[in-house]
Amino acid sequence: MTYHILIAGFGGQGVLFAGKFLTYLGMMAGKEVSWLPSYGPEMRGGTANCSVILSDDPVGSPIVSHPDILIVMNLPSLDKYEGEAVPGAKLFVDSTLIARKVARTDVTPYYLPATEMARAAGIPTLANMMLVGKVLREVGIPFDHVEAALKKVVSARHADLYDANLRAVRTGYES
Image (cartoon, rainbow, N blue to C red; front, side, top):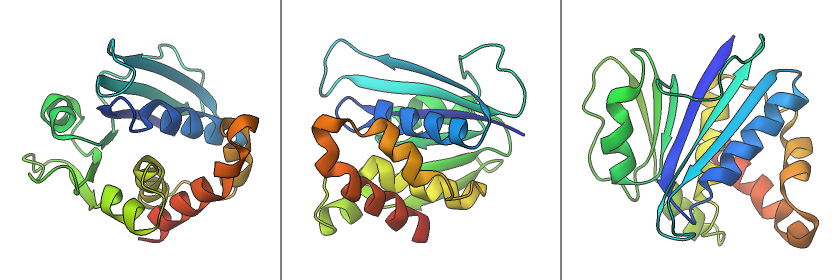
């Protein structure tokens, strides 16, 4: 099985962090992985996206042009990448920030008010991880290695955010 994942949003929404987490999750599960970040010139507010590939087979190219899993955290990202998803793809949309529905009928959309849920939970910067939790559940990726993967991506400097990230992933997974 191979997952071609594209995560897109504004800089500062944790797009690259979410991709790095999924990559470590795949490594912990014994998969071949690839993570390729891309972001605009601004650190916060510019566009950001990353390509993640999780596969049973070696990864030939790290670029995801046609995702089968698309996670979008803002309207410009949905507008830009919706048409690039393969037929049958799963699209995960932060419905707090994106009012419109997915126009395509050959993909399966999942709407999660992740930003609103994160604010309500007192972890307003972790909407990204709530969406990732939803992806894990809907795609059928086991929760087994979530804690180990989080330990790899939450730096020692931000160790106090480990529990909040775990709670965010769990909240998205259970929604």
